[in-house]
Length: 194
Image (cartoon, rainbow, N blue to C red):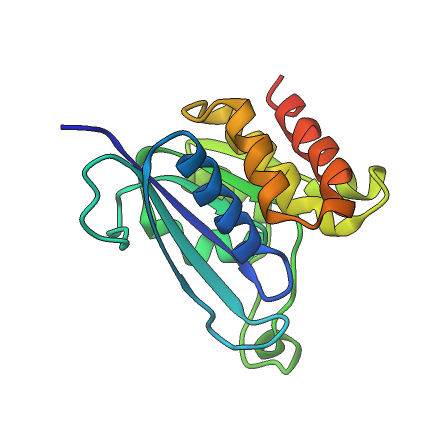
């Protein structure tokens, strides 16, 4: 049976989760793989929880990733990584941004945001890449590049798609005037693996 790769992406509205999922799907298609994807927008506003799932390989029959079967959890917001940790398979990789977006339920006192985040995440995810992707994006001059930097780290951490396919996907999914900065962000993410 052909290997199927399962990636769960999560974050909050406005972070670029859906664009990241689109780029992963496009890169896998460039590599000649079958792709299935789905997304859930949660609250349809900036700051609401967002989850997307991308599956690629050969012999796909469903776009849904079952709990405990994801190869990668790609979280642009630290608290969302905890919320969706149950999707990750034993031995799976967690790519988690240090960014913390405090939800309205916390600011209104209805809930409490997890404390000691680095310690909690390390206890949950044996294979954790917990990085300040926002600072890396700011170094490139655009804080909105966190998702592309994370894609570069994903490509290095799970090298099943050739770099040329990733770059072609970037070229096809972002506006031409934004391609070069996104290419640089992708390369910056790949370098984080070293």
